[in-house]
Amino acid sequence: MAGLPLWSAQRSSTFFSGAYRYPELEHPLPHSSIESTFVSWMDAQAPQHISSVLERARQRRSLALITLEPFPDPYRPQSDRTLVRDVVRGDYNQRIKAVLEPLCRPEQPVLLRFAHEVDNAGQYPWSVKRGEDYVRLYRSVWAQARHPQCRRIHWVWSPAGNRQSGLFWPGGDAVDLIGVSVYSSPRWSQNGELRSFAQVYEQRRWLHLRFRKPLLVAEMGVSGTNQQRRRWLMDAREAIRRYPELIGWVYFSAPQPTWIPLPTGHEDWSLSSQLLDLVTSPRLSSVFHCQLLHVSLPLLHQKVCGPRTA
Image (cartoon, rainbow, N blue to C red):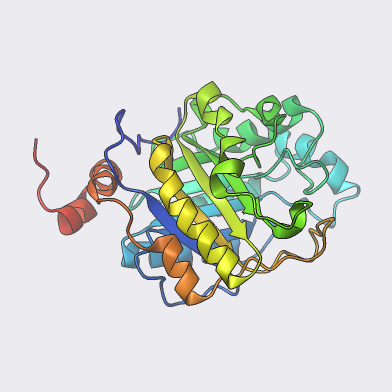
């Protein structure tokens, strides 16, 4: 089964928001409610990094979003080609166990976004051609967290949101919510205009309609002039009111990684602090956040929200 329920059947209000920044900064964004980071399970410091992010989230009374990247072992022959087989037969179990140890501590909820954007063919080693191979990879890792100690993990299946994404669906029992990516650049259109947040999101919304899970924009970015970005973000803040299935977003405030080049050239998604405030500033009330805390972190719920009423 997936993690403890984060959401009630009827969404009340709150919209979770945060930003990934590189290098990661110690001081929080105003009003942010998500701490986001990327972790390779091949990084020897991965468990310590996860623990530090969870502690930061606990101190800030926010929700941790860990994007766990299953990179292959560079010392294994042809590991890019054999990643799925090797994970399924247990060759990476020690790596998986090491990252699950801090994630499975019961003190607080955590969103675990595993093997993201699989539908971007060729982008990552886990961007396999056959959907059944990805499902074997995902469920092999998910199965290792199927015990009560890991009940605070909430699994995020996070394709980019392309039309072929459904081929990689790992099953409703292994998914708590669906993550998608929303990016826009003036270089991606013939007339240099930005596609709006709503235009891009609408092309991913079918995932909720088909699989009946809440959606999270796990990555979001916009490039262009400051004026273009401000208008785009303001329009996005208005658009989210139309999507009750959308529970939050995380902005990718960093340059495009050089090892993931784009056909249109390098993009820098970084925002100034003033524009980032448009991402994280309050939009709706805190009722929904309190519902989450009541289920997943009762002690913190009492501190933040007061006694629960019937």
